[in-house]
Image 1: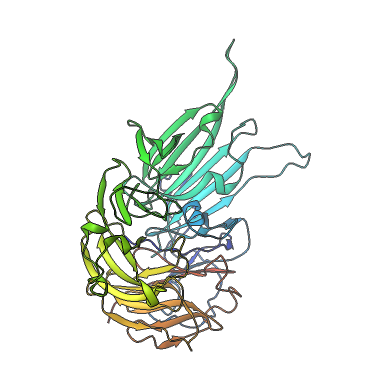
Image 2: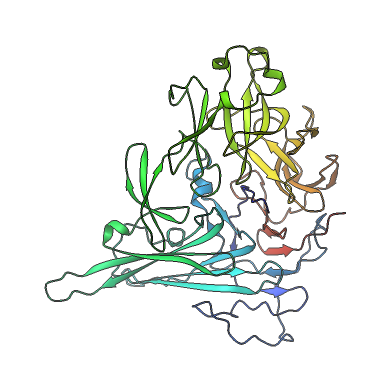
Length: 477
């Protein structure tokens, strides 16, 4: 299945109080702190939870399959990679989704009345989106004596990340203290462990000393040495360190794992005469440049290849959107094409679209579960098009409310934030409004940093606001 990369976040605070719509066993205490299953509670156990009083969500089940009551110390996990991929200063990106799991974190640290620092306690739970049952509970305790370079906050010890193959993973950091022994001074250790959405432990590494306490993680590796143009990363769980080339200036992550490096002549003069060069970040080898790939038909008559410029944007783990700038009067509109990331092979020539943010090309891109249709919005209005043929389904007109796409269901429903209309469901094929203002009591401004609706990779929808509701996907008609 094609892995998609979407930007769906929620910054809501939640508490315990899980209830399943069908009365199944969705007890958050069904696993212990090690992730081992506990004896399940009786299916007749009475549970209470928030009633869903909102409108029916097109393309999703009429009632939530499970829910959580709002208010309390539990919230969604921080996603530092998504925060870094935006141009918003101090943006605290959070998400309730980890692949095909719903992830919730909790700060259980008790404050000291005397003002002295106490031990820190953090917890994460990975829920099955279909039932709400807890796949794994992970507890972390950091002694008060631990003096590391990592700030003692929940977002620093539990984060959404990726494993070595680019698959989603939860990073859990814990600290410990080694007592003094004879002449040997007391010291600290820091352990980095990563978990799959299933709850399986993927790998763990323990480092001694303060220098190993504040490391960042990328693609299942610890950043252990920073250098000019390239850095050294050490695999979590063991293995030889690898040298990894830096990404291009302000470039969003492209591809699975460490992915690809894309640079152009306005950031790096590569000497090849190409305006864009794409290389493997692990080997440093150039894979292709603009002279190697097929141009859009509209640019076929441009004689000097040096007059062509393009930027590479993420789409899936194996494919990217190559946006070509047009010379002359059409310079504001770029031609979107789908290319194979490793070879640059043209897969489809798509529509023209206004890309306002020339420095980074940030925007909103959501892909249908089958990978066949994408809705993009980079500057002006949104455009829906086919990733296999490039055919345009529709584009927004200048007199329409702006659509910011959030997600697509298997049944062909586009969920989006629409100016003055709030959370809105539209028919993907036609852009017809099916329902609007779907979450008036959950969030007041859907253009804020936190998005209210998110989708797991298997199509379950997480509606997060004052309360959390999870809906099942409807089959494609």
